Image (tube, rainbow, N blue to C red; front, top):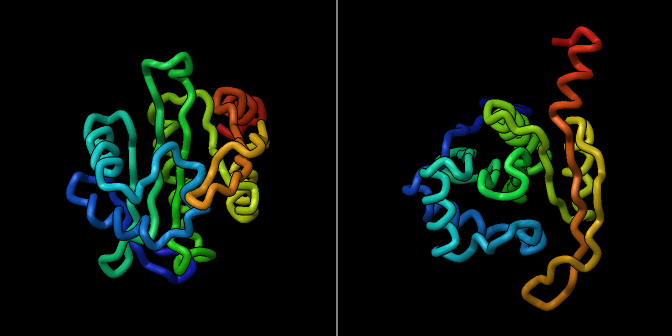
Length: 182
């Protein structure tokens, strides 16, 4: 794939990618990780993620450039929960690779994965300071649904808000059909 003249390879995550993910997570600012349920800087967390990915419980894509992991996307859905029709998109891009369209491409690919899984509603959780990410998801049709104040605490004990954006894929699909957009 190429975006804004930056070439990268996007592919499904495998268990062999655990070391690359740990190295990638170590390069990220801690505020980039706060919207995740677990700390992906911890090996046992990433190993569990890889196992869930292998079992199809999470669908993850990784973006590599020159052999280095520069971004990842995951579509997370719990078929045994009260909300099996809802999936969450999680996107991370290395600081040095931002503003090049990689996050947008990963978001689009994750969106497409969710559609193939018959997901009815997609959500994304974002730290409100990440205005570029919020703008990207709003362009994709997501809208603000909630602001959870002081919802997460970083390693220094500082609390941060989390914004939740969502898109109703069934409603969007019906609207597209009504307007003749297929």
